[in-house]
Length: 159
Image 1: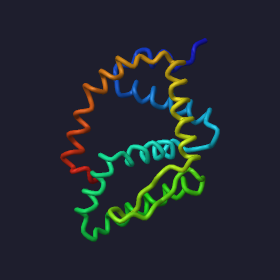
Image 2: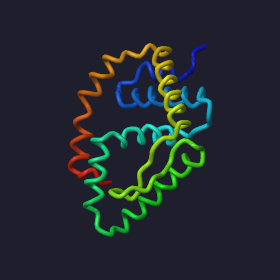
Image 3: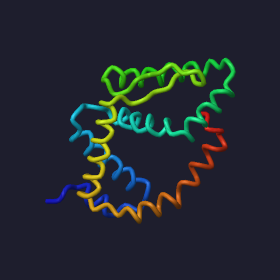
Image 4: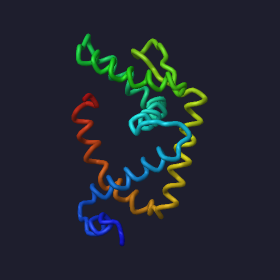
């Protein structure tokens, strides 16, 4: 007898729910097969460290930080973000750096880079197992990204 969710999923019309199911599947596969126990948010944080270290993203961060004036809201966020990064630092995956143009910067350690490589390998392995149609997903992403980009731009990338 097939799993009861198979029928429900096969009749779904909401694309965002289908995307959520796919995303959760990938995350569970990676977490189940990763050589170290990490929460889903920690995996996302590791990927963000790489993203934020790219020159373009770093320039945006520096520019946004320069606009902040003794903001209590910013200080609260700073403590929350650092708390998350410190957990990765305790695991030996990241290092928090003092820098001149930002309140802090984070880089992956060699161990962190190994884990990132393992994550990427597991994601590719998962995509092969689920017969992922990258072209169809790419088209959907291209058709939809403008909404979130426009929203974030209107918010001036400050949340």
